[in-house]
Image (cartoon, rainbow, N blue to C red; front, side, top):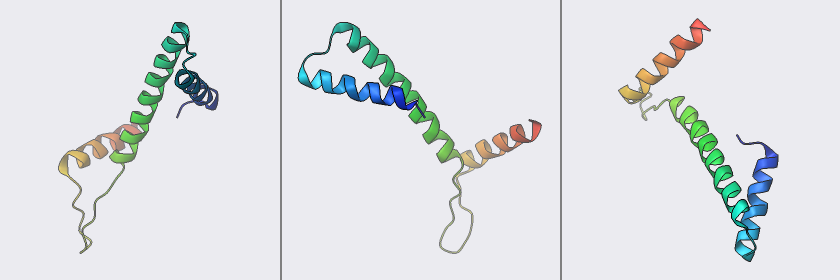
Amino acid sequence: MLEKSKLDRIGVLAKKKKAGTLTQEEAKEQSKLRQEYLQAFRGTMRRTVENVRVIDPEGNDVTPDKLKQIQEIRNRMNKLN
């Protein structure tokens, strides 16, 4: 995830924007920080989803094949490291 200082800065800039006192420099900074945040969020979400196993009520693994392939590749790479 993003550093706390960057998250705090995003909050400060959001308040300034809402108040109408955001400069062009700050708007550029806000845009850059938002992109960093989204990239970090998406990476975390992807890793979370890629570690999911889907089990039906009978206890059968019904994880989609595409997800199983991704998990298999990840496991192979982890064994190499």
